[in-house]
Amino acid sequence: MPPPPQMEKQPLPLEGAEVAASLLGANGAAGSSELPVTSYPSEPPARDGWNSKVEYFLAQVGFSVGLGNVWRFPYLCHQNGGGAFLLLYVLLMLLVGIPLFFLELAAGQSIRQGSIGVWKHISPKLCGIGYSSCVVCFYVAVYYNVIISWSLFYLGNSFQSPLPWEQCPEQGNITVAECAASAPTTFFWYRTALDVTDSIEETGQLNLSLTCCLLAAWTVVCLGMFKGIKTSAKVMYFSSIFPYVVLLCFLVRGLLLDGAREGIVHMFYPKLEIWGSVQVWRQAATQVFFALGLGFGSVIAYSSYNPRSNNCHRDAFTVSFINFLTSLLATLVVFSVLGFRAKNTERWVPSFNVSEPGSVGLAEYRSWFHAHGARGPWNLTDCDLEKEMQKGAQGTGLAFIAFTEAMSLLPGSPFWSALFFLMLLNLGLSTMFGTMEGILAPLADSFKVLARNKTKLTVGGSVLGFLIGLLFTQRCGNYFVSMFDDYTATLPLIMVVVCETFSVSWLYGADRFLDDIEGMLGWRPSVVYKYLWKYVGLLAMLGLLGASLIRMVLQRPTYLAWSQEKVEVVVRCIEWRWWRWRRRSDVLSGGGGGLMC
Image (tube, rainbow, N blue to C red; front, side, top):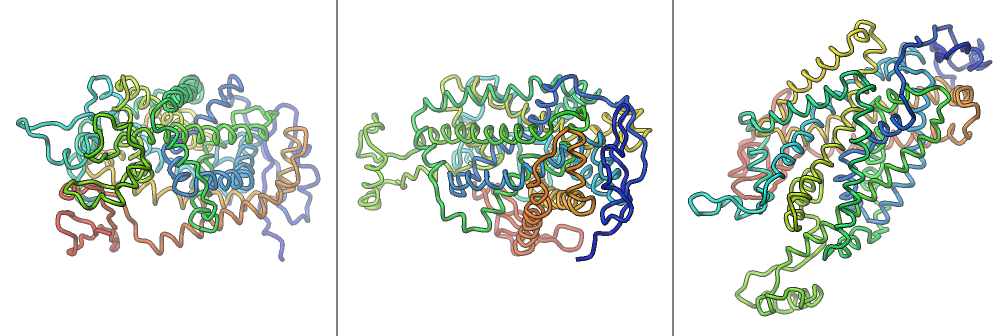
């Protein structure tokens, strides 16, 4: 196997009287197959730093623990084998997630630059990795803040009793037909909050309420990032801790609800056969990838403000462990509440004592239904608790439909609703602060004019994000959020992480990088990391990239749309012809555009 190509390597900047030669030693000698070392000035001492380890820790945890822990992880766990998926997730986190997370922490802390500066120090030819991270961060920030604006809208509507999504509205003493045919929470989400069109091709006008909420969300982000980590770190004391207080409150309340036990049993019931599915491995790896925030550049940016002696190895395990426990806690909360919701939507047989539904057991009713349910004149359906819990149990449907419906059944529902959406708001903001730092820090580190005008850079970036975000406040904006989430971030981020891992482990050299870490921490991490970076992590990311590409090639881009005529969610496909959306003539009636899949 030929040696890797020679590339110019600049030494890691050191503090005080340290010099690069003492850190890299003989590894940069001429004639080595690894990257040769050239002199480079140390970093200016004026760079910001964390006031305490607590601030850094809260910022890193706040960024990695986001909305996906609450509404994506529980759904994936339930759909992919429950306890078996948890074991698979932990395995991939230990073998792939934590080593790559440690790699980004160590690179940022040793070089003390943002993502652009880190890869430019390793070699000027690699700075494109950093620019790619910034671009993907901006893509994510634009649509992620729209989800925060939705939380703001629901939070504002939670301070009234009864809640506006508890009952169907009436027009002339007649219940609105669309609401009567679906459910109050579903109608409020699709018609009142979003006022969605039937397809992504029907744009519609701007939603004024959501536009104002989006402006408020970007204003909060801008104010929180106004002076860099000096202001955002203070906000983190509340935005990173408050969600845990709320989750614990919901856990205690949820475990006391009727149906909580059934919900948790359905959640964790192991289905070991799923280990043979490539799709499950892909979903588990993707969740590990996004849960730790790999590739965004935010992990590198946050760690770059640390002193060089900080134990980033311990931080990698601590943050990852807290992230997993948070996902587990959120899963318990979600399915205890969904179990309560499912049990309260069961349909009972008229021949039983309807005034005392608890007198009839679920097993007894299902047995009667399968034997006699189809013989009577009544309109009855089977009572399948698992199917009831799956309704709206993913993504925005979980937060804004299923969970809102469950909270409307609780005594004091406005209090629980306000608490829940305030939690979502804080989860989203702490992640947004990290995402914006992954954009602003590399640019300020790389361009002196931007570093001197970082406040203007923050305000300008927020204004630009708001203007582009208006795309998502149209009546079809929800569909664009779904498309951006599914197709614009995953592949680019995986490619960024593949390039990062290959650059460090093969071009720069894994042994050499371990030498750098040893000089920084005073002790050498296990040689196991060398093989995890060079082989296990890199091959896993290449496999994930290949699986994602194959999936995109074999399956047309799809999105979930609300059909006003059918009064249900339908799956629509996108037909891409050159650079425009093409309207298909064979659309089913009432679809209004977009191919029905």
